[in-house]
Amino acid sequence: MFPPVGGSAIWRRVESTGAHEMKRRDFTEVSNRITPMENILSKPLKAFLEQRVSHAVVEDADEAKITINEAVGAIAFYYEKIRSVVEYQDEHLVRQNAIRRILGRRTLLSQTTEKMAEKILRELVRSRYFANNTLPARNIHTIARIIERYLGIIEILQKQRQCSDHDEEWLLAMASCAIDEALVPMDDEEALVKLMYDMVASNVELGRFATDNKTKAIQIYLGVYRVLLKPDTHRLRYFVLKHSFPAWTHLEEDNLAALAHSYKDVRSVIELTINHPLGKKLFPLLRRFRIPFAVLHTIILNQPPEIFQNPEQLDAEVRKLCEGFYASQKRRLKTRSVRAFIYVFCTKMVLGMGLEIPYDLLVMHHIRFLPLSINVLFPPVLLAVIALSTRFPGKDNTDRISQAVKEIVYADQERTVFVPRNYFAAKTNVALYVLFTLLYVVMFGLSFTLLAWFLRAFEFNAMSGVVFVLFFCLITFFGITLRRSVKDLIMTTAKPSLFGVFLDPLLLPIVQVGRWLSSNVSKVNVFVFVLDVLIELPLQALIEITEDWFQFIRDKKEEID
Image (cartoon, rainbow, N blue to C red; front, side, top):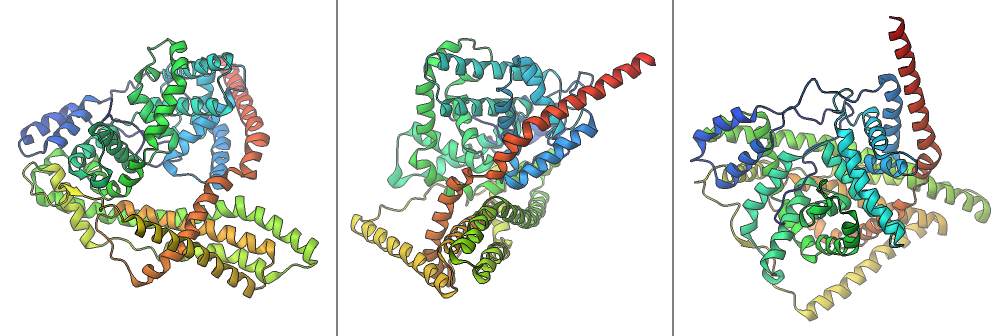
């Protein structure tokens, strides 16, 4: 039960080479080198290092691996690259989403679970989510067991007429998370979640949001999991499923009828847990503690344990890594800004232009080039301005991170970061809350009134005006979301600027509308529909036939030799 540990990824990105499977060092040797330092290390850090040692994995270099034809695999790889352009998603979720997509397609075919598992793994290797000839073939049996379990539950529910399309989608999403975690165990990251929880849990005072200790522990742990590993909703659900209902994920459990019988109650508990109102309140609080754990994790992976015996050397390494994280985030911000614009342009703006130009020709009887030009040029300019105006942390933030790392590492370090603190102010007076709500409604109306005035000044008609508002809101939301990724690096409290004091109330309604549009309009993606229905299924079938042909020719050549 909670507080548990769960798996996803931290500071991990899916690489085209499939090189995400990191080589592990000899943990027994590392453990022996850490033992003399036990007196200086903090209890949470010692527990973290011991857990990493217990999760050491020994790989058999001689065991059979899944191998594909590299030339054929290149086709699948470039298809995934094209797909990533029109289906915007965080990099660390790409493989998990690919598994869910492949699994959904494979369930439409009449295959045994063993054959389905083999085909899924081969597709993942072709798409270079795993390097060729590195994924052990023994995974086929494990993945087949997972598929058999969840498809079996779906079949039982369908026979009882208790399985809607949403239920099937929910269960297949859990299966895809289970498959991803079986292929890429995140033991180090899971231990890191526990380490951060041990450091922050006792210091969080909930104030007016006070609740029972069990709920507090669960929500803080989920908050740490969200902050460190950035799971999507499906992975978060699987995290709760795995630790609150272990029978669902233990492959030794064969009573599928009992699992199917408990499905409705299990799903209800999971949804209540991940949507608890305290979760949203804790996220921004815990987020500022993320970066020191990421820095420490990197040090442990890349430096000898003896670095902890020298605080000055540790401090120098922390500062070096911070500068590296800042520079990496700047590059990532630029890359993600370009990807976000391409995604919006290819999926939403093309659709918008497809409405605006016919409207001009059919209703207005001529194309209004000024509004059309603004609708084409304004979104990328706005996104560039938001990205380029992002502030990155400086020396004060690095000092704060260094102090936090020392408090995590050393038992006798004076604490100024991880100290008990009430992060939640007293409840606002009811009358003031009503007044502020009314004022926000007024600001909401004012924001869109100013937009309407701007559109009228530049002679926008009804359709071009709607297109402008839609993409202004979407691009603003994407831009603010990209800027918020920088907050993962920041521990210090930003000083509010005079410009922001006046601009934030006007932009907040725009961002909220953009978030709603992103959540709902994103479901209307013509390009993804075309890829799913018209291209992917025949393409994968052609790839498999081609690969089988090459294997047939190879076998014939071996017979001759």
